[in-house]
Length: 259
Length: 232
Image (cartoon, rainbow over all chains, first blue to last red; front, side, top):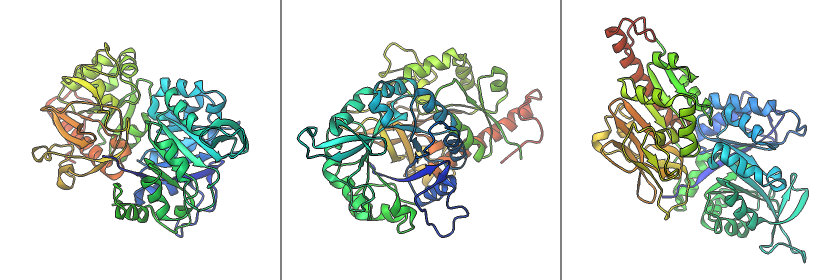
């Protein structure tokens, strides 16, 4: 049986949570570990930390985050952002991360995905894909193009084909973000999500655009995603993960109930 | 109370730190180690593992931990294999044909059916048969662990046999936990299964504390658990 996962995503800069997390009773709203523990209590199935630290030279703060999270939070967590080598991934996994996510570095050097999978196993390797719709004459066949470097750099690569290639290279999971929808609160790009989910055999996490709990339902029922990722609807205290699970269960989706 | 020494076998692969930290959380003095002396002293031994069967078994053997794990499992001390650590305890796996496993448990690990997505990377519910709900691993849990949600990441699984104490439904019953005497193994990750996982690990650590205290009482040279017997 397939059990859909609900995954809060935390953006982290220099080891601190950014993007206005707004729980009322946190001791330190910027502490990723305290937030992670809160989401665990709410019934989050996994967590994703996205390291957006601008100075890419210093990996120590994100490794320290992995260490502290592994001491306090006993659900799986993924760390993405700035991972360029097997060695970067190894430090995070040894510190306690369960999975590492690569995006730009995988597009620029696809062999990295294979190297990581051979070294740590596919289950530790998430390939993150930022995709945008394209109507240009030279648009990729699926109509969705891969962007890198935080959405600034277009690659000309077909997002659906790249997801298939990532699976072939050894990725264990795809984290698929619609750059068109990200931040809009208009819901997932269902066409993109289903196009990828229907063509790969590995689990896909849908991301980008969630503004309501119904959007999470659509991601699974119409997008065919294995997991749904959201940030702001949870961070601002509008909804708990438990609320999300309840709405999904009412819609007939199998989820792990929040205790 | 005494914190039982639990040796988490460190063969340089994957994320072992979560296993160590979760065992500490539930009362163990958990050490990541490949030191035969320390492992011999431990009240219980844990064999974690992630990745593919062949590389994991090779890494265990290259770290000199193959025979040590086999001996530890054969002793009356509690032993727990986790995920690919569990799979390594069998005789082999379809994932790595020709690679001999540790042979602590009989049988060959099989690929999950092609009717379901592989890997299973999700939470799933344990199905614990009524006569297995008194297993030390589950006994303290509501309904003896039946219907407890735990986290799985795997493409291969053991075949149900007389040692099976729990399965999960994933294209048919997939083995989730086994027990043979004081030897246990879980296909799921208790260290990543939030409160349910911590409850299972606490049961294991408490078992280590009680059996360790018992063997220390009967064996004055047992240094790991010297001191007052602990019936936690």
